[in-house]
Length: 398
Image (tube, rainbow, N blue to C red; front, side, top):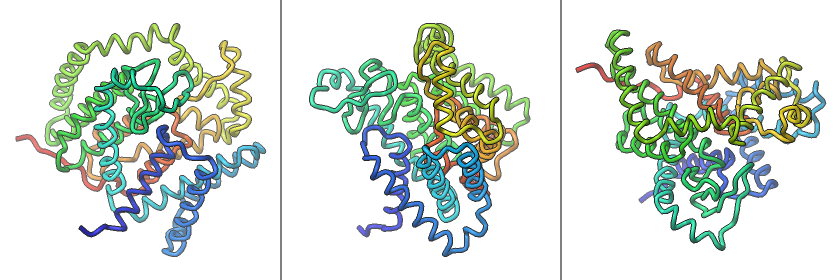
């Protein structure tokens, strides 16, 4: 069997992007992370220059200019490494959107996430066994919980019934599955149904509110996609009926009770839910003070400590990609990314599908902070490309 060097390189690049986007089972020294990101960005930049793509890289120039404005005008020199990282991630996104074939990045991404999801489900089934065999394995400290690192799975000590796979929390795992689920849903690949079943089961095991909404979005997009020639009334009617079935199934699994505890009871008694809501309020407060260029990383964290005390907290971690982004970089930068992420959709999709798709992508990153994650910028640049997927698979009524 001949080893395809080009394919191997692409998978290795994608694996690094995932690791740098929040894989907690792999501990990479900070110095090595800097070296790898910088080396990748420089090599990609050279290739972009050699092939004449950089001369047309208006989007990359816009991102760089907006980042430099925030960096220089806010004297945010202490956080220079964060800006360098984000520019590196933008270069990665520019490179992939320029040279990889349509749908190639996301199809390869889906293959990797499918393996991660399957492994996580196997480990989740044996979680009681893992609980009694934690000795000798390293402990990873999260913001509010701790994990035992089994290297291919993170076992949450405080919440053992929630599946976070290899990522920093169950909600983050749901985001990564959501991207793979969307890709699988709209492409005609082998084992499509089997993959979707794996994703749905994995989403339920996260017990994340985001996961439940991803499933509802998937059902809605599937109906609109499959009934392309149906009237709007038929689509709405089928959507209501199918969504009702899904809601009944979710009720059977006590999903609504889980959501109620998080959104109603949790706001008052659950520290995680309360911190998440307070974090967004703090972000909005910071945005109001400097809406155009933001306040930069250093000043943001200073203001978070001050404003956080008004809510009875000494520290609050941002939980919303877009409010955090708006607070640090300003509204113009945030709008550029929102437009890009909302455009990740097949070129020949219907208007209704594109609208639902845009809502899905924006919602996906509202509940988690992906501002400093390379996977997010890859998706943004793919969104600005003519198409991230090529043509959508459309099935007509029989």
